[in-house]
Amino acid sequence: MEIETPRLLLRQFVPSDAERLFEIYSDPVTMRFMGRGPETVDDERNALERHIEIYYNAHGYGLFGVVLKDENKLVGRCGIVRQEIDGETREELSYLIDRPYWGRGIATEAAQKVVELAPIKFCLESLIALILPDNTGSIRVATKCGFEFERRLPEFKIWKDVGLYSKSLVGTSEAISHHVPSKI
Image (cartoon, rainbow, N blue to C red; front, side, top):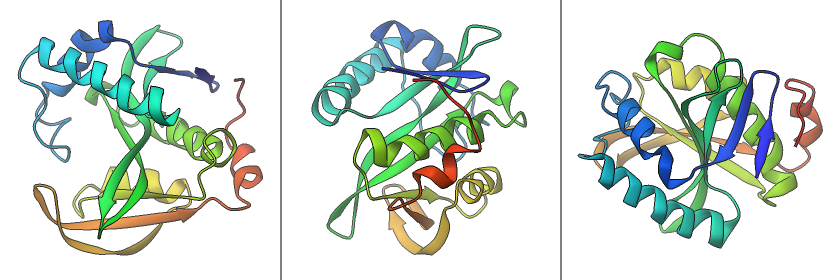
C-alpha cells in the first residue's frame, strides 16, 4: 500500500529500510521522547520483519515509511500501532521524523493523512496519541489532527506521567480530507 500527499509518500516498510531507520533512531535528540532505539542494524531489520508480520499481515495497517518525494528519501515513520491501556487494546497514531526535517510540517501532513484514512481503510472508530508532557512538538501535531487531551497515565511502559490524547473518527473523514489532498 502506498499513500500520497502533496509532498510525501507513505509506504509499507521493507526489511531493507533497516539501515536508514537505524540511522534515524541513532540520534539521541530524535529519540528523546521515544526511548531506546535498536542496538544494531540487524536488530532493526528483525523488528521490521516482526512489524510486517504482526501489523501489515494481521491488521492491514501499521507504521509506514515517510518518504519526502522531492528527495526520494525516507525521513521517518507515521502510522498506527496497538497499545494496551488499562486492559483495553487501543490504536495509537504514532509518528517520528528525522531531526534535520523537523519544522517543515512533515509529521502533521503524514499524521493528517493517516487519521483521514483510519476510518475508511482500516475501519477504526477512534485513535489515541500517547505523548510525554515536554514533547510540545508532538502535542502540536496531535492537536492539529483534532486530538484532545483525555487524561494522564501515571505510568506507561518505561515512562511516568504520559498524556493520553484521543480522537473519535466517527463521521470525521470528510472534515479532515480537505486539509491534505491525496492520491491512493
